[in-house]
Image (cartoon, rainbow, N blue to C red; front, side, top):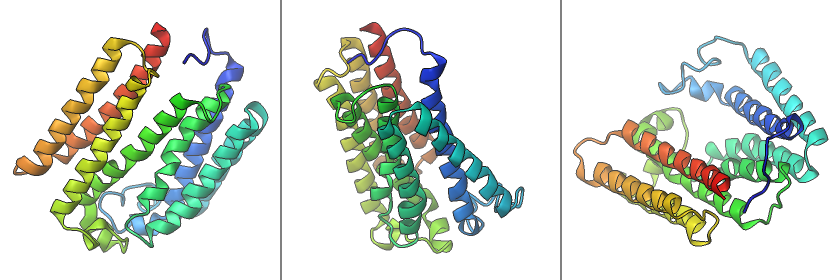
Amino acid sequence: MVLFSGTLSPAMLLPLFGILLLACGASAFNQYQEWSTDELMARTKKRPLPSRQISTAEAVRISSILLIGGGFILLYWSPLICFTLGIFNVFWYNGIYTFLKHKTAFAIVPGALTGALPILMGWTAMGGKITDPPVLFLAFFLFLWQMPHFWLMMLKYGDEYHHAGLPVLTDHFSSFQIKVIVMIWMTASGATSLFLVFFRIIRHPSIGHGITIGILGLLSLLFYQLFISRQINYRLIFRAANFFLFLVLVALVADNLLF
C-alpha cells in the first residue's frame, strides 16, 4: 500500500520532527524519574543524572522543552489523532509504565505499547488511517518484539535490577524458563513479521524471501546461544535482534519504492 509518492516537503517533515522531540522528551523525563534507581545499577550509573553531569532541575527543564516543543508541533502541523496518540504515549510511558516497573516484573507487557504507538503516529501524520492493515501489523510486530528484547536483558542484568529494588522475572521463573519464554516470544515476533509478506503488505518476492531468511537465521542463532552454547553472547543476540528489526523496516521502505 503506497501512502504517498514524490519528495517529502518541509511541511510533511514537521510532524515527524515533532514525534522525535516528544520521544526525546519522554525519555529525558524518564531518566529524571528513575535517576536514583539508575544510580544503583552498573549498566545505568554513568547516565547524566546519576553521574551528576547535570542536575535534576536541568533534566526537568530539558525534558519540558522537548515535550512542549514536540506537542506544539504535533498540535499545529499534524492531524488531531497523531497529537492525541503522542500525548497518550507520554502519559502511558512516564506515568503508567514507569510506575508499574517498580511494582511488577511484567510491566514490559503493557509498557511495550509505548514502542508501538510511534508507528501509528507517523502513519497518521502522513495521512494514513489508524485502522490501515499495514500499520497495524507493523505496530503489533514492534509490540511483540519488545518483550523478548527486554527479557534477554533480564537474563544478563537481572541481578542489577534486583539490587536496585526492581521486580525481575528471576523472582518468578528459573533461568531456563526465561530462555524458553524469550524463544517463544521471539518466534511470535518473527511470525508476525511474516504476516507482512503473507497479506502482501510487502509485495516484492525477493524482499519477502529476505525477511523469511532473516527470521530463520535469527531464531537459529537465538536457539544456539540460549540452549547449546556454553556461554551466551548477549551482545551478539542483541545486535542480531536489532538488525532484524532494522531489516523489516528497510524492507517496508524498499518495497514501497519498488511498487
